[in-house]
Image (cartoon, rainbow, N blue to C red):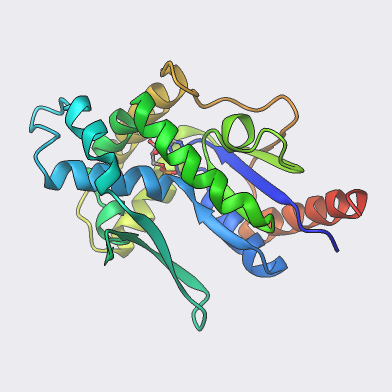
Length: 232
Ligand code: DC
């Protein structure tokens, strides 16, 4: 069967990463979390004093550092999981914490950061057989992807999901704080000048607010089977 490119875009904490990860494992494709790449650049910037306590971002310093930032994914075949690496260090846990979450949208809005990461993301797609999730995968990174999905859910549902994830990790936060972060990121992601979050015209939309994980998985696999049979 011919390998294809699968682009899964959507709002933060919409469940798109879980869906993308599950589908990739199920069909034997490589999964790439493009949001993790923006988070890794943000962590680098925070560690190097390029994001100030008031939230202001030194765009120029970040852009100058881009050649020094190497991002990769370490795959653990046994557990079928992968960890984000920043200059050889595993940063998977740190990039999911609130300080990075609070700053990442501002970093992701810098055009030169986007250009550098889009180039890397496109290189991952050279071999096809990948599932990539993010905000602009179906519009900018792979506008010719054979399968495009746009995932959405209400802000309250997404905040609740994120709160559960953070609580499971022992991060102390409140529903109100997480909801404010979700709403703030939605605003920046959809209004930035460079590749704002939007549904590609040919993407199939899924609102999973009231769907179980099993229902989402079933929906996704059926769509994949339909599209891949048309591409053979
Ligand atoms: O999917 P996530 O929440 O881990 O993404 C982190 C941030 O990165 C989010 O604020 C939007 C941004 N992002 C982006 O602008 N483009 C992508 N392709 C992926 C993520």
